[in-house]
Image 1 (cartoon, rainbow over the protein chains, first blue to last red):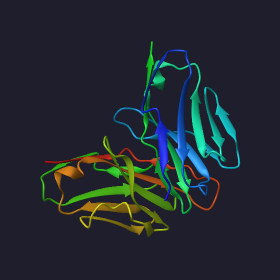
Image 2 (image 1 turned 135 degrees about the vertical axis):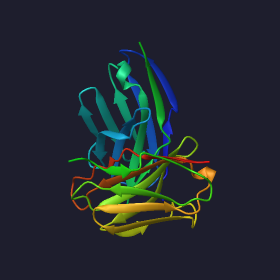
Image 3 (image 1 turned 120 degrees about the vertical axis):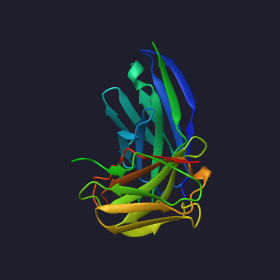
Image 4 (image 1 turned 30 degrees about the vertical axis):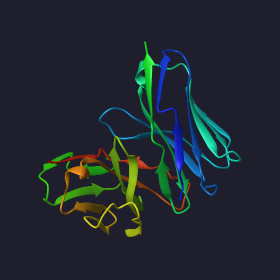
Length: 111
Length: 115
């Protein structure tokens, strides 16, 4: 089955700087890669996603890139703000609609 | 749409008791997932259903755990008997399959504490 590894486990950045979180997956058949943000005590919420036929997708300050050959994808947050502080999870959907999550990255934006 | 609805939000019970968690998926969604979240193990998929049929229950930790989906708008996750190591947040999530609208939406979760 699919295995998703996520790095780093914690990330501290200064407000206004960029943050990058990286994930690798094992199953080359996986075709859908969402990113979720989870604030303390709340549910994971989808912030951006990308399908395997696309290399990059952007939505305002966040972007995701996908390298199918290397089987890795990354989340980029530019101009970080204190409200970006949360836990971020990457995920990969393997054949059969099963979504497998990475271990999460705690992002702290210092003001 | 009210989103995925879970109940109860919090459950405190004693070891050995039966616990039943409930979920109502988003109307029109045909896939439902049960996840468990802990600090140590992160987000683990326990079981998922397509069109009310269990597809993959390989994540269900033990026979103490069971899940049902009697119809398209309701699912339960039961733990019997419960143990302290079952303490976690249990999330239900739903999505549509077969089209391009594949986004997975989570409920607010049930915080389970087994004493």
